[in-house]
Image (cartoon, rainbow, N blue to C red):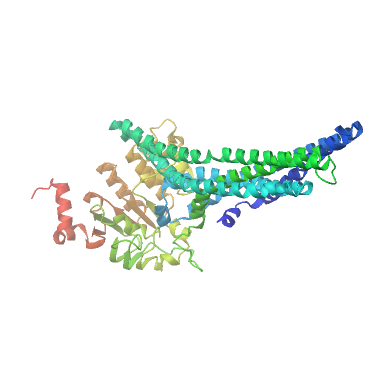
Length: 581
């Protein structure tokens, strides 16, 4: 897991290495300060030698200054490396999401992906910065200070051997107790983000039904779960400081008693026991050892908190798209013919039944195919197999006589324009949105495509015309206008296959007829598949498919289906004669 995340360090590796090296230099200088201070006391103050005080005082200042320089350098390199690492990590995650197919996207909720890109990465960044600084400083300080203390008096170091294991056990118990809490907190963050996203996305519906109070209660409930978990974790971690203080004062008292006894017994003879200066430095080393252990415990807490975010981030980075590119992909789609040969499909292996079952269908280039069926009849699923948004579970789908799994995915999708059931426009001008279909489209090409989609007429009514700004999600245009802009965007690709997934449901019947007439006149060689709820939208099609339960239960022209299909008859008469017998 950690090795996978560290791949995102890349160009920040030198700073990542320099930070702990500078930290080692800071610690090395810092542990020299108590030793120099003891010499000032023993050889300067007690001996009454001011020259020794000045000499060792200069050494003390130099050690402090060098330690400061190393500390500042370490902090700079750590912050630079951590910021760059988090930036790379977000980039890698976002890039990975772009490679996901629909199955992978269905696996992760939108709110969860947003949480992983924001909150989780922020926690990983803090853990990374602490790891290359404090995770290096604390063990080094512990080892160097213990080594210096042992050099002064091995007997007094017995105190550390008794206290430190007990302290370490106490800290380990605290960390184990809070780990499960932090693991639960980050999953609750997903729910919180989901509530916020859902509320903001449907704010008009919330206000229309006066549900603000209920939405607030929902948000408050999930916020309280996070609050309660953090409070519980903080109450447990509150024992950290008293435990540390107990260890510090126990060591100081024990060292004071034993050290004073040794000084008295030795007659202040360094060769036989302990000097006053050495006892003073022992107090400093005691503080350094125990404080480093306390900081080390905080590092473990931070790493414990970031363990769940690291796992969740790696889930994104290690997710493998189901739609693999072939070894020798076909780079060009010959024509717009489509063949379904014994195609069955289910969304997951755990699904109880197939969404599509035994589909056999042959469509010639330039044909117009109408698709009708009730809700849940898998109309959208059928057409999503054509641009390989999903792969067939059984059988194969061919475009231009070639299995879609043998195509380069980009080449295949560039030849298939699909206007999805949920139309999406992005923030930017109308031109910006249209150029999603063709980045190099000229103004004349955009106007022509918009005329085919019956969009030019309403665009010209805007003060800024094609430079009119579209809000996020197309919230400042009507549903019918949004659909027509999406159709125009699809036409700009000049596709061999055009799929309209219920994409004219929000336009009036007259405009719908004009769009279909434009298709017949302007793009006769493009294969067109039209999913619709209105019979009028598909009755002039070369072939109409009637789906039910994931199967094609009837197919034929409008006149043929009126004679042979009871389902088609029921839909037709309910729409044209109000359902009269």
